[in-house]
Length: 55
Image (cartoon, rainbow, N blue to C red; front, side):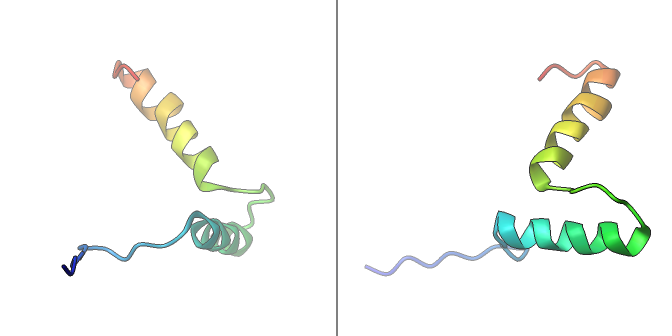
């Protein structure tokens, strides 16, 4: 039995995503170590909670 999986968007690893975030941060002059984990939690606390969306 063969399983075929397809997705609309490319699937990349957290390691690769963090490397892309670091590259963007360097390009725009942000001197913090950005990670996907940090971005996810920042979004949850800044955007959703401030707009009354429960976690």
